[in-house]
Image (cartoon, rainbow, N blue to C red; front, side, top):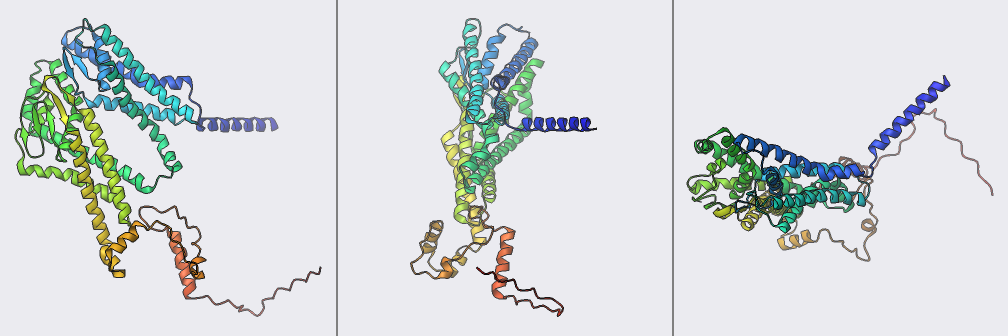
Length: 487
């Protein structure tokens, strides 16, 4: 009996040790670094080879030159301008780039979650960037080797490495931030205003993108006849499939352009220039999705497009709501800046040179400025509305008629105030309520329930002092006095 109990105890101890080993962070092994470095690039190359092989076989061109085309495909995924038959294509589809970046972020997040020390994290980051740069170097070598017999031209090596480092670097930073952002914020004690402002900026950017997607899909539905006619120009199944696939790949580019139009900025697509009110038609790329563009200007009706950034700004202001108007406005400003920065970054990546048609894309500078202005304006309206609904000027001027003095008090409300030398004891000896945490103040400015209850009890004790209870039963025995202790 004792032997079986010892055996059971041993097995239970082994199970506990195994669970601890699985839950404890461990140092990244060599295989983990290899997976981080080559998993996403390897899968990307495999998908590109399969897609190009199917397209070539359907077109009856065979598999000759597929290696150069695959290498050019990897460069295009990283937004490296590609030259085909002497024509430089700088406007590259965003959808493959977004998918590869999502895969890189996922793999890096999984690897960095097991890192215990900073060198382990640096090794994971280096492996992810090194693997992508290695595949870019091999792609450049393959393109250079097949340049004599292929239509793909040799791109600028420095630009190729720079674009790869930029695109993959952003994905790696996102992957590292997924498991590490909260500990970093707690370590550096980032205020709640900055945290909420950052989240609200991302949400506002998502609202702008959603509005652009609605406009693009609405345009496709309204101009479905033109879209289907352009698809029919493919003349065969592989032509139909190619045009449809290209339209899907360039869909995020169109959505981003539509989102920027809602802010009042201009978008150029080939020789066509459009904004919220007017359209100047010209030569455009022969893609079915381009047929979703309006044929004529919208005129005054185009002002309705401004509802999108206005709604994004109102949502941003509501998300950052606070009883303190200064802190509320600061969070709105941070969120507006974050959303404008995202618009600028994505707009810059989605544009470029489109062969002989010239530059295609948005006016990046005005897009950022207009986005910030719309979001800040709408968010400030929410700040002002909430301030007025909470009492606003009337509450302040009820205590003091000088508004400038109140603004000075608000600007310096966090500064310590020195007590005069002869201050009464009731001000200098006051202690905070039990459990009060001066650093637990949030944007809402409300006390926890337990603190409010404690305060109510203290007020009740001060207002109505409790009478000392007297024994009602005569049979109660008084305790005997303790014996005196003599030295």
